[in-house]
Length: 252
Image (cartoon, rainbow, N blue to C red; front, side, top):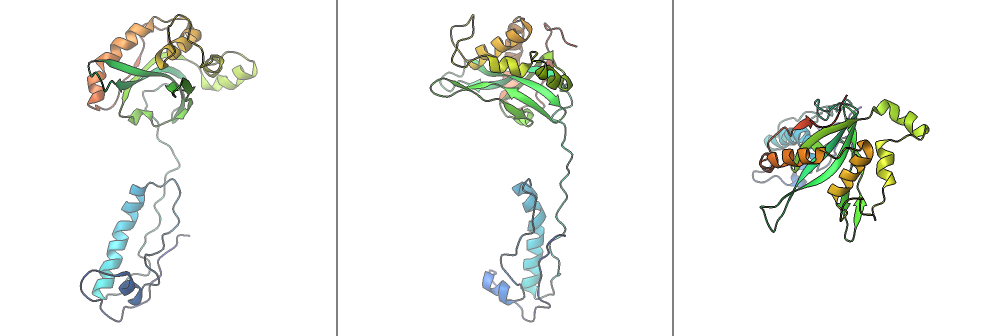
């Protein structure tokens, strides 16, 4: 049951002209000021709340100023928030493993174009898991976790599908102690430089994980060239951001 704002009826006096004061409102028919809010789900954003309540408050103030009889239920029912989550992006393939690139501007030299690298595994239409590391002076730390809002990131270059792992088989593979993307990621320490590289960065870490995953590093050049082609579009925040399949990886 939704809580309503109870008002005394009707207002016997007109309010004085000029700015409406809290004391005037209480004296002219309202039990409390500011009015008590109904209970909203914690997931409601400020924009949703404002859009719901502002017209009600304006109507209430108008009634109070004019001396007219206000409604005994100024606040309409709390809007229903859908429990169905929208897909992240229908172009993403469930089970797809993607290289995900973000624009990383160089504030000292704008001619240098670099990327932040990571991996993304699309587990369901509404959620996946992102794997990447970030700098934490000194060294690097893992920043893996479930993700759903990355397609709206201003700095997102895009995603390139490089592999596939069926989420429905993940639990069985883990029970059988078979290799999964998560187990590969967890197997490599963050205090170690990846073999074949001179330093540990988000790029060398990501490419090493990919090499452990499919033993095929040939997509690096393809992804870099594609990322550079997308640089200006990313800077201009052109939407939607691209999602493509690698041309050098064997995909189902």
